[in-house]
Image 1 (cartoon, rainbow, N blue to C red):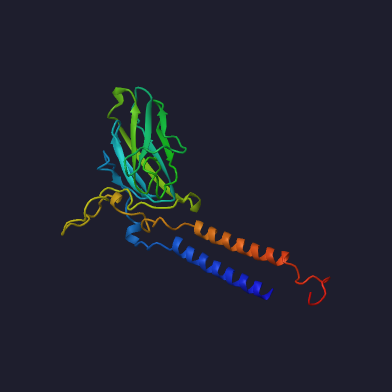
Image 2: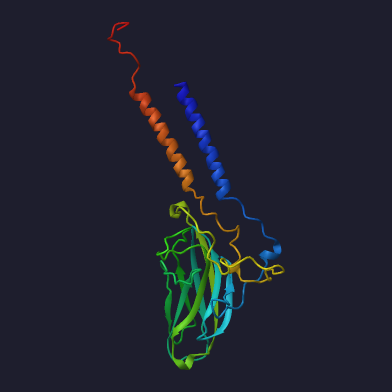
Length: 274
């Protein structure tokens, strides 16, 4: 029995060390940002195509002034294991409009594949007298790896496009103001998969190394950057901790079962030396 207690103590101590190591890897603090970075102003304009999309960060509200009928583009990085939610608000002109207008919010991944929304009002119609219209789109959890034929969202740049898709021609060109707010939530190891991409799906990931003298210009698109804390390695998830805990519990159950079923030794009804 003493040996059993010693084994249990050693196993539980090892599991505790594994849990601490897992927490250190998964929850390592990201580098602290300076006060100047925190005070960085949010973008106040939007791009007009994928190539000119304005870079934004998660939890950063971006605004833009545009004309009705323009295509507005933003781009943000989303990592494996995260679920992104994009919300948009369009403030409509006060001038009299000639009819209802239908606005639409689309999200594309790094391969410029349109990603379906799990839920949210992706398309909405604004009445002629409406002052604003709000849209939202919650994507599926980003996977670290997927089959080539699958349309699963993969880590990298995600493009947000906002535009009007149906309105009276006489209302084209009226001024509007757009607001975009993107958030990401870590979904944990329940959504983790084995394997990872060689590189996130961001513009320039497959190009050769920069030539001598080239440097990243300040204010370059965040699609070429990384999320806060960098891209995940793809191999670690909290499933490792639960797998180790399950192995420990199975070993303890086996030892306890053996102790209870093996009996007390030699049967008492047998004579000595038999």
